[in-house]
Image (cartoon, rainbow, N blue to C red; front, side):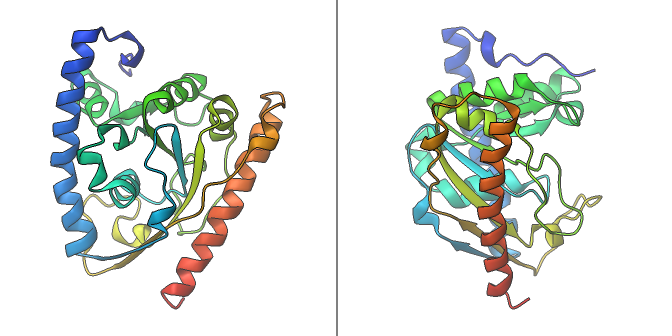
Length: 242
C-alpha cells in the first residue's frame, strides 16, 4: 500500500530541512547520470536555449525509460540549477512502485517525485503539479506510460488540466534513443549508444484561458503539445539518419 504524500503538510522548519536535503541528494544523483548520458553514451542536445529559466515552466516530454526525468532536467537546467534551486524540476513517479513504503517515499520525495496512481485519473497528482509550478518547474509525460517501441504515443488530458489551471510556460520536449539505453525490463543502462533530446519553442495556449477546464479542452491542449513533440521526434530521427 502506498504511503501518503506529505507535500502539502510540511511546516516551515521541515520545509527548510527538506529543501537542503533535496538539493544535496538531487545533485549527488546527477553525477552518475552525467556519466551515463555524456561519457558512456553520446548525447546530442537541440534547442536548449528555448527553455525559460523561470518559475512556472512546464516541460512536456515523450516517455521512454524510468530515468527520462534526469535527462530532461539535466540537459534543460544544468548548471543553472546550482544557483537557482527552483530549476530542479518536480516530476511524476508511479505511486505503487516508488512510494510503496516509508523509506522509498522519503527518498523519492527528496528527489522531487510526484506520486501518480497508474492507470487511473489522478486529480491529486494534477493538483500537486499545479502547486509545484507556483514555486518552480515541472516535468510531465503526457503519454502516462513508457513506450515499448520508441514511438510517440497519444497524450492524456492530465497535463492539459495543469496547463489550463496554471497557464505555465510550456516547452515540448522530444527524446530519441533512451529506449535503446534502458529498455523496459532492463535495470542497467547500455553503453555506446546515440541519444538525442530536443527542446521546442514555448507554446502559447492563451486562447484557452477563458474556456472551461473540461476533459475535452484539456485533451485538445495535450493533443497540440503531442503533435509538436512528434514533429521534434521525427526531426531527431532524421538527425541520426534513420
